[in-house]
Amino acid sequence: MKAIILASGEGSRLRPLTDTTPKPLIKILWKPLIQYNLEILSELVEECIIVVKYKHELFQQAFWKSFWNMKLSYHIQWDTAGTWAAISDINGIQQDEKVIILYWDSIYPKQTLETLISTCQFWCLVKEVSNPEIYWIFEEKNGKAIKIVEKPDTHIGNLANMGWFLVSGEIISLAKDISVSPRGEYEITDAIQKFINTHDFYLQRLTEDILDIGYAWNLLDANKYYLENLKSSDIRWIIEENVQIQWNIILEEWAVIKSGTYIEWNCYFGKNTIIGPNAYVRWNTSLWEGGKIWFSVEVKNSYIWDNTKIPHLSYVWDSIFWNNINIGCGFKVANLRHDGKNLRVLIKWKLVDTGKRKLGCIIWDNVKTGINTMVYPWRVLETWTGTLPWEIIK
Image (cartoon, rainbow, N blue to C red; front, side, top):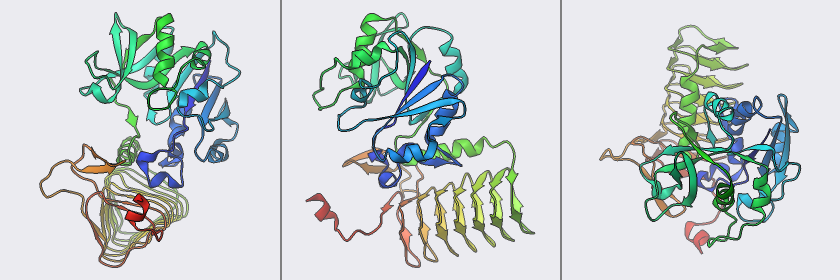
């Protein structure tokens, strides 16, 4: 059996975080996001083909030609619009060979997948949703799919595609015969519909939660999920006297937690990090390699990448900081609207409800802030390019 991971997108909804890093290679704890699915697949298939496009050379640098005992190969999608078009050019898969096809940006429960693979011939994972008008929805009859429709205008059901298919290699030839959609892309739904027309295609309801990394704030969800599942601490370097640690932490090599620091709940501290003295770090915070949280700083539920420094007397909640950031003394970020309603964020010129009452801010690579800077909830601070916003719009 083989697998195909669809990982060619630019991750535009996660900008500016994906301006330098393809979304699948963003890390949670010490692993790129795509690696969580590679670990599952390595016990199910002999070979995995990763469809790449945006900054594709970085994938090969990260994983090369194998992952554990599984062979890896890369299929570059060049200028053709729509991921399904790239699949039609893949060679080396037999017509009658079973193939797992999945989107990289959802992380699935391993035990469920192992059970399903042995249960029936062809299937797709689906989940019941309350707002089918924004999903790919299957119409069902006797547990089998008879139609798949993107964002249906009329009600055909509420079983949404969760992005993991088990099909045969015949899907490759079917993908060659689909036409361009009204929005100018070769759509996955058209190839799946052709497959449904000639095969029993079962809809397997997913009852467990999956991690879906569609927006930047989902990185906080994923970070929280894996940190909350730490069963024990892994301490590889120095903790000074008078440090209080509640629950479990990971402390990598050459990292130091200084005296007077209080760590509450599970946290991750990468190589060469310094925490304290007298810092308060809590609730699923990750601080990556070379980062510093200095004297009298409070950080909660935040995701902080390499070489980022948060100096004394600062307050950071529910935020994402990228690489090489230097925060001025007295920095404070608000994370809650005055009226307590969910925060909405402008994504591709549309306001998107985050589903969250508390969110801090995003700060991108190489940003420096002055002293006593205060930031409203879920604002994005990008590196100054010398171009004003209205010039970008023009």
